[in-house]
Amino acid sequence: MDQSGKTAGVVARVRAMVRDGTLTAGDALPSTRALAAELGVARGTVVAAYEQLDGEGWIRTRQGAAARVVAGVPVVAAGPGVPAGARAAEHARALMGGRTAGPAGARADGHAAASGAPAASPGAGAGAAGAAAAGAAGAGAPLLDCRPGVPAVTAIAPKDWRAAWRAATDAPLRNGLADPLGLPELRVQVAAQLGLSRGFAPDVARLLVTGGTSEALSLVVEGLRNHLGRSPRIAVEDPGYRSGRRAMTSAGATLVGVRVDDDGLDLDALAAAAPVDAVVVTPTHQYPLGSVMPVARRHRLLAWAAVTGTVVVEDDYDSEFRHRGTPVPALAALDTAGVVVHVGGFSKTLDPRLRCSYVALPPGAPADAVVAARLARGPVVGEPVQVAVAHLLRTGALRRHLGRVRRDYTHRRERIASRLGGVPGLEARALNGGLHAVVTWSGPATARAVVSRMVTAGVLVSALDEYEVAPGSAPAGIVLGYGALTLPELDRALDALLDALG
Ligand SMILES: Cc1ncc(COP(=O)(O)O)c(C=O)c1O
Image (cartoon, rainbow, N blue to C red):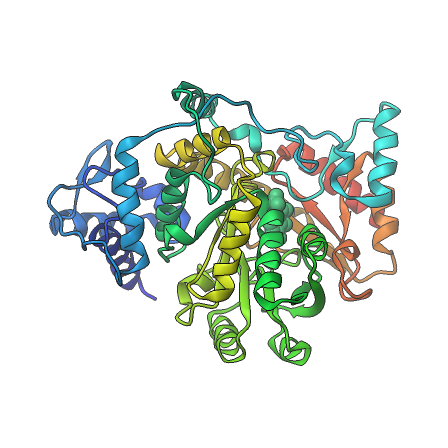
């Protein structure tokens, strides 16, 4: 698509969000720089779009100030039969003005994989290597934890972080129980964010807050199990996300691994594994190998799911960090048949210790059963956490944070590419987005041997085979998380890797 087509796309998106009331008079739009980074387009594209919107009277732009939606623009009346976005708008108008906050609370702690500092977090599931590393740390060896899953938590501006928690503690105490579906204000903010950055407007009534992606997946399984009256059979990527598999198996699912190729999930292999009740995919950045599912394959997957009555669970875990390549629309944005359950959260953008994620559900009976499961389980994310996250979204603090860390992640990605790029037999993958790299090699060294040599050198990474469903589905390689590393630490990790490979 050329620049004018992209500009028209941004214009149409903002117009639609104003029309349906997701954005209302006075709301600030993201800075041109932040929105351009979020959409993966040139800044000039967004500048041109804002100028056009200003000229058309939808927004007002002023030098040095945020562009804002002007008063008096037409808003679609909410009511039965109106699009999801219009219902979201009703909540937006009711709640954005109210700005209530919940009772006092403290930061949620204790997620095993969430060490902001480069120190060991032995509970994070690195198996024998983790235990060995914990021993090494106990013996006083400096240990650099480069396992994936830890973003640059400490990069958030302290004043923004404190303001978010003040919002949680400033609210008057009140009697009553939390909304089991999630704090309405947070759900409205997430819906607006998905509209801007992922191109679809979820129905706030079917947008549920969950305790991380793992709880989201277990909730979907519980809903499907109740809906079907039996254990759901679910296709998962191989190699793929281990904690997600664990959560779904514990919730009573039967899993079947489906291989992935350079374009993500192999749809012929999926068809061969059918019938399945659901398929869980990471189309934006296959975890862990990093492939991006092209639009044509996305359409094929959705068409197949519509015909076979399969639920498609889109795990959109790190789409905010796209370093290279044309952005591909979310499956949920392409879904005309109502088959996609979209899962996202704040584990990669803020802090996995918050345990705060969400599920956007399509209409229909299977998804109704997921809502019922949420109501039956009750709320799992403390209300103060939800108030704080909503505050970070509403004030634009999260957007500013993402703008900063994106640049840092790009530098780290470039360092990995430049240091490993020319090494014969080595391939650095998954660098097109996200916060981790996969390094594979063609020599005889096994991944376990390389991981254990790196542990001895004080660097902890994951072996690629830890992500396999069927043994042998992944090439020999390691997964290296760079979200929380400084450049010197990253260099140390790369030195250890190159030494380990001899
Ligand atoms: C594929 C995938 N999905 C989701 C997540 C986030 O999980 P959670 O929200 O449970 O921390 C991760 C974290 O590493 C992941 O790798």
